[in-house]
Length: 294
Image 1: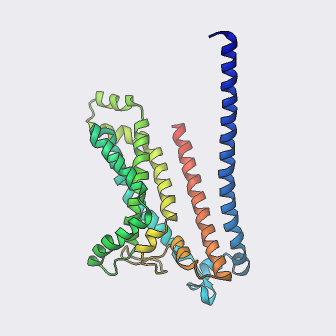
Image 2: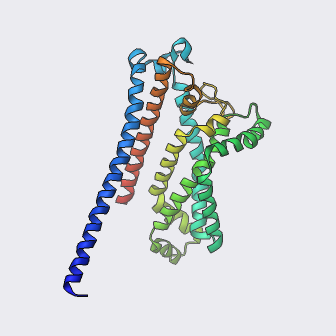
Image 3: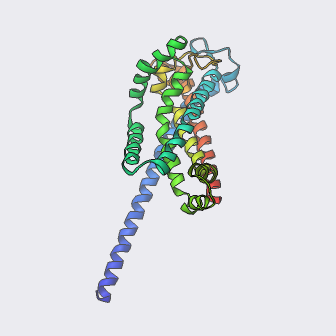
């Protein structure tokens, strides 16, 4: 290739790079703008509630009776956190075990099949999982203790929804651990499980924690599946067999008929969810930064 042809080719590549950079910037600005519009719209709609009712009554009112001007959301906030935490407690060990199986024990074909199954599970619509939970999980729980629709049912269904996130992120982090760590442990006389438990998993722990945090954020905002299996009674649960209502489920159940301050209160609860998710993602970024420094 002659010098003029090479220069022309480099100029063409430079123009393509500039167009690609401009396209990526436009996509980033569009995405950021959409997020800003959503968050600002929700916050603006919550202003009438904050002006007339105020933040203190979210915890000081006697209960959630918007028709009578009572707007306590404490029980629903606790319900949201407990349901999401219960799902993470179940999904974290199952996800880590799945990741270890994929990384160290699965054969070539069995590993591919299992990974594809996890990806398919991640793509199943939440309403399908909720319907399955209502027709299968709830009757099983009801045999132990009525009514069946409960905190336990909601946490179990959410576990299935966030398990692929935990498992696939944990698998990626385990695969990113330098192979020399594992081989060095084996060379020192460790068994395979000892090397995994004492060397590989501690090295991958920050990344696994990040995956769990992201899964918790998804579980916190899940709606349809929870509406179908949680029972939707506004109370602070004292048992895993008691019904519970989450903030996201409350929005879905009441937005169709809510008006005036009641409607604004639902936007206030949505704002609380957005702030909670932002805090969770900030913690996830901090954990990821710590992971990069390890």
